[in-house]
Image 1 (tube, helix red, strand yellow):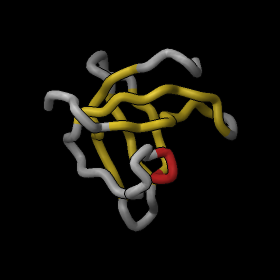
Image 2: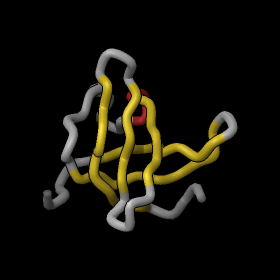
Image 3: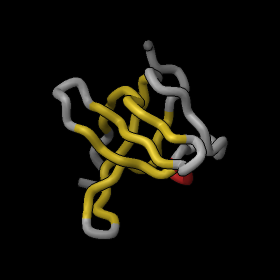
Amino acid sequence: MGREEREGIVADFDEARGLGVIREDDGTEHPFHCTEIADGTRSIPTGVRVRFRVEWRVLRSEAVDVRSGGLAQ
């Protein structure tokens, strides 16, 4: 975990809570917080293909450094 870049789709995002889930092509899911969206917008639509890393945070792994720019959807 940590440095390996992964790709997936934003499967769910609750804008009011700032919490989302990214699903990799193999079905593995990673939760993330809006503060991990790299462009600083704090919001991302569901269905968007993203790149991210996985890090251990507060008793679980989470997606960090979530980026969507320039990826085919």
